Length: 619
Ligand SMILES: O=C(O)c1ccc(O)c(O)c1
Ligand SMILES: [Mg+2]
Image (cartoon, rainbow, N blue to C red; front, side, top):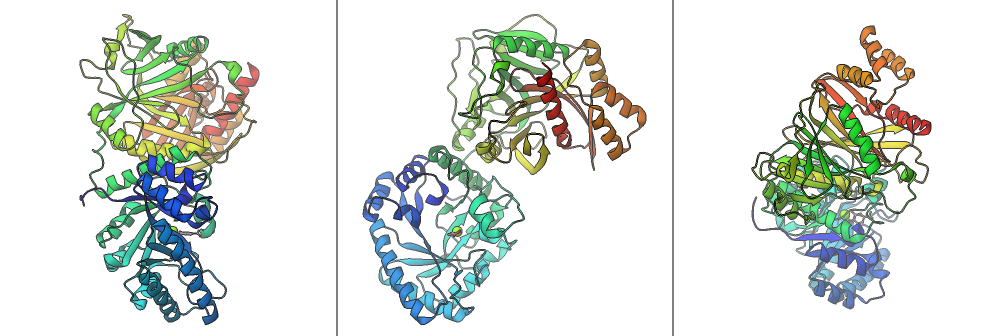
């Protein structure tokens, strides 16, 4: 499908703050309309008419007023009361300038399991609504007492057979119960009155709790929203695509950026559905470079470690204190100009006295850097204005949610990023052959994990892998790999599962660059002989490896002697070795993938974290 752009709406319940805060954020992010959640209106000091006027000023339509609860299939006395209640809400809607009310399927203990009665009472409600130029959308809650599937809500709507009564589809209620969205196509488009979109992580828990705390914006979770929404559009629905996401983090987050995150999610979904919202993400072909920001002292430690890893200082930036370090065709920039950024805000920093180092920028090789930048802009990502000298390349760059800069490069171009550097004349060939950057691992602050995954997915076109979790010495950690279609750019996102307090004894928000290497054991042997700062791994780890894998004793002995870690999956094996920490949070890894091993050795991460803690305690 590729008609014009759809109408985009967002439920006020997605965002933090007062109703006025929410409306301002939704408008600023470019939404066309809102679903006003009743609680937000009730708590507002402004009358419905004033809110309606404010929405018009902001260019927002009030697309839905919600929810009306526990209306249908009740005894006659209760019906009269419910109709009285409904008329009061129609008054509110009239003032708001809204003509669609959402009725959720009942959870009332008073209700009875009687479709005929439900249909008759909803017909009566629709009649009252129609008399005021309004319509009613009936939504099956996944935990509805009798009506909890969209098929059932549609049977009742069909039975009621009233032009002012239709169905509201909510992807969460359908997909959380494993419902089949294909049957949506059997509903006539004009009876689909509203579409609410929410994603969610795969969780095995009470569906109401899941819905009220863990919904995510489309593209952030595990639901197949492309197929879901595709079915709704095929059925002929032409109303708004509206986000309805109940999420504990977003409800506390600054509504400005949260609304932008929401808009990005909708644009990614539209892109997947074939709307002409963005040019496709150009193919990537690996990392051009990674840039570390560090203070001068930490930079000396970092570059000493890079020298051990076979990197040579091959270039100096023409106008900034940035060194280029190279091993073969793998480049690392060390920048002592911009202070290393911290990702988490407002907390005491236990590593501050260690000096600062951080991954300041990632640069990927793009088939078309300018198109990459245009896509980023279409996906509502801030384009960075770069200071540059007269002879320097105009690099296209955007800011990731965690503050990392992302550059799009074409290293083959005559005026590419490399021309910004004066060659030192040092050769880049090395005895320790690094074949590329295997992955970059970025720890995300708790509040930005899902936002970061969506950013890399929508802007760079990386596909997210399944979320894994593991128990680490300083908390449960969530890990999510992201990979481009060619398998050339990998990013591993990590983050703790709950907000971490002050007790973060080793390092907070560690970040690292993992280099690919053809023979990690040989490299580790050389590093050892060289006196490189290799992270020591304890014997217990190797005893356990032996128990788990029954490794060849000679291999096990070599792994143990050189602090090389090991993992295996159905497709292959993984050998890796870590350096010690530099500054407050950065380290390096050498990795060797054998066969089709696709992971990141996360089973070994807790051992690495404890070892970094020991390193810190000893120094
Ligand atoms: O959790 C709820 O109560 C609730 C209310 C309205 C909705 O549209 C919904 O999907 C859930
Ligand atoms: Mg809903």
